[in-house]
Structures are given as C-alpha cells and as structure tokens.
Length: 335
Image 1 (spheres, helix red, strand yellow):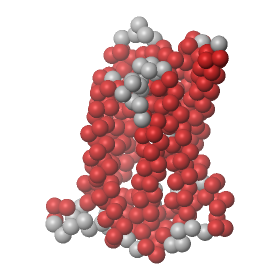
Image 2 (cartoon, rainbow, N blue to C red):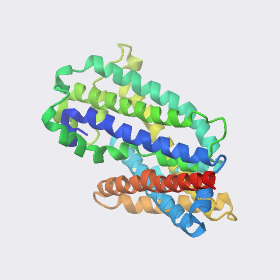
Image 3 (cartoon, helix red, strand yellow):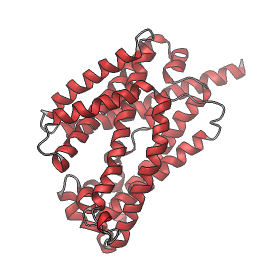
Image 4 (cartoon, one colour):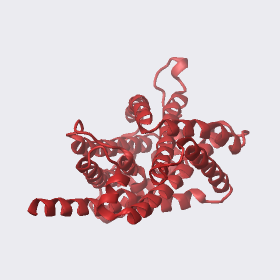
C-alpha cells in the first residue's frame, strides 16, 4: 500500500472497505433470499444445472489457487524467519493434513474454531499495533492527505483488493431466520476490517518509516521487533508472541479456503465420499504447492491472478445471481 498510495494508503483502504462492504451485504442478502441453501443450491433454480456447474468449477479453481497461494506463503515465512534449515516439503507435509482434517469436519466446525481464534487474533493484533502507535513517530505518517494525490489513492484500490477478499467464502454458508440483521453486520464488519488495516499500516510506518516499509518484504516483522511492550523479560520478544497470533490467522485462512474447495466439489459430486474428496484435494494442493515453490516470482503471479479472479467470484457472479433473483421475485409478485 505504501508503494502504490504512499502516506494516503489509509484513504485507499477505507474506500476499498466500503466497496467490499456493499459486496458482502449483497452476498448475505442473496443467501437470505434462499434460507438454508448455499450458492450452488439456489443457482440451479435460477440459471439451470449446466450454468451452475460452470460457476461451481470457477469457485473451486479459485479457492484451490488461493489455498496454494496461502500455503506457499506460509511455508516461505517459516523458512525465512524461523526454520531456514527445514525443507519446505517438510513444512507442507506437517501442515496440510491438519488443514485437510479441519476441512473434512465441515463448515460448522471450522466456523466455531473461527469464533475462538478470531477473538484471540483481533485482541492480539490490536494490543500490539496500538502499542506501536504510542512508540512510533507521528511525523513519519504526515501529511495524512495530499489533495494532489487523490487520483493516486483511487488508482491504488486495485492493490488493496486482495486484502479484502474472503467475502466469497459466504457462498458456502447457509442462512436461517435467526440471521435477520446479517446484511448490516456483514457491511459493518468489512468497514471495521478496513479500520484495522489502517491501524496496521499506519503503525508500521510510524515504527520504521516509509523507506524501510518499502525496503523489506515483511516490514511488519521488522517493525514489531522494535516494540517493547513491557520491561518483563518474558514479554520482551513481542514479535514472537505476535507472530503466534499471525500464524493463527494464516492457519484459518488456509483452512477455510480448503474447506470451501471441498464444499463445492462435494456439491458437484454428491455421491462422492467426503473423505475421498478431501484426500484428493489435499494431494492436488500438495503437488501444486511443490510446483509453485519451484517457480521464481510465483507470488507476484498469484497476487495478480487472485486479485482479478477474486473480483469475479466476490462481485460479478453474486451480482448476476442477485439481479436474477430480484427479477424473478418481482415477476412472481406481479404475476
């Protein structure tokens, strides 16, 4: 964000959060029109079986790509920051069975785990980044806004897209009558996520400055190494404690994308055994991850692919289905 938007990155993040807030509210509203069903189920009624299978294949491939992207990113962080002598193959073999086991248990179990880890994750990052605000230098983020850079702020939205992707996961979550205010909650949640991102970006700049943020591949890790949360020796290495929460986030990110992949495949092949599906998907992700780790600049390619594909699955497809649902609902009322 610093590379593309400079000190106005916070403006870009807020704008992007508002756009995705409307996207999240749209997906939730669509799910609420068809209580107890997920996108695959109600898409059949609106577009037919053939079109639904094409849509499902698109979502499956997308979630598969994101899973490989997150898994290889996770492996890279482990290799360069913690386990430089451990082959990445070993990291994949150790982690993938756990992710697949969670996916096998289904979306309900994964959601319950999210509730626990999500709270710990939010509390952990907010404590650290608020501390960084007090320890950092405010002058590093000034000026907060330059009216001459408005075009730059808007153009940088494309670079913030990938940070807000994830709302498409709600296409595999069925809703009930208990989710009356879900659309408002989804909208406000995305706004809050945007505000948290602003805190993260600004606190990093305040700790190490613009030039250092741009210089490092993982500026966050370098920034939190400077944080001295307390004089107690146990808590001196706040970076280690923070990364523990950070790994929780990555762990859940990989888990939910693999779960989404499994859900779509199981919907398309209803007679297939879920365990077999999970094992096959696990093997495919493992092979693709090994291939990806051997390709130079693969993360950059992943970034671009996921950004544009994410807009399709998070906005375009839901918007088309939402429009069709509205038209059919209005037609039914007139009839």
